[in-house]
Length: 262
Image (cartoon, rainbow, N blue to C red; front, side, top):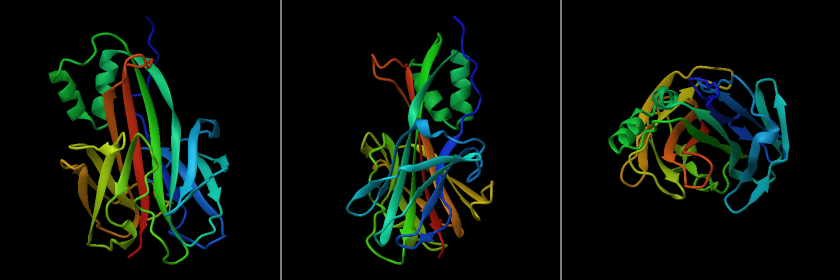
């Protein structure tokens, strides 16, 4: 059987607001960035690959229809009318590829999931023949529309894997801590690992502070805010695919981005 050539490294997908605040009725611009160095981008996700794109407020939601490729970024734009915090969400349609067992093992190692490799090795679940891997990516970003207003940080997008803050990221000043939760299938994901980092701004392509985290039994973790700027948390979760789904393994990627200005 011929196996498709696969890259050794995949990339995170982030939604990056171009500024921390937008005035009600003004144009909100968010860039969809695909890369390894937050918040930089190496290539643009094309519009046809977007499964959903919405603005979630504290009580409602609106579809984002203005999508376009701009250079190496996906450009999302919208004019939110109501003052308050909002969540921008986007999900990318799944893709599948065929690969060898050795390639799958390299993928788990290089993408920062060695614990998944060890766990599935112990359970005797690692493949001995070629497999079909399916992957999908989900991104959220917090934005402020005007000053103050209703909070939306706890709104769920309904992504298979997503971050939901327990405390408001906009209120977490430099030196404070922020509490977040990871959900998989709408339920807390315990003992999952991921990364956080902060960059000075959207023009930067390399974060100046990085940290690792692991969720507790309730799927929660605490992040120390160590600098102003554009923050993100990111993780992937790898599970055997449901039988009859056409894939052997599912890889779910999730990110959350927000500005810390205090």
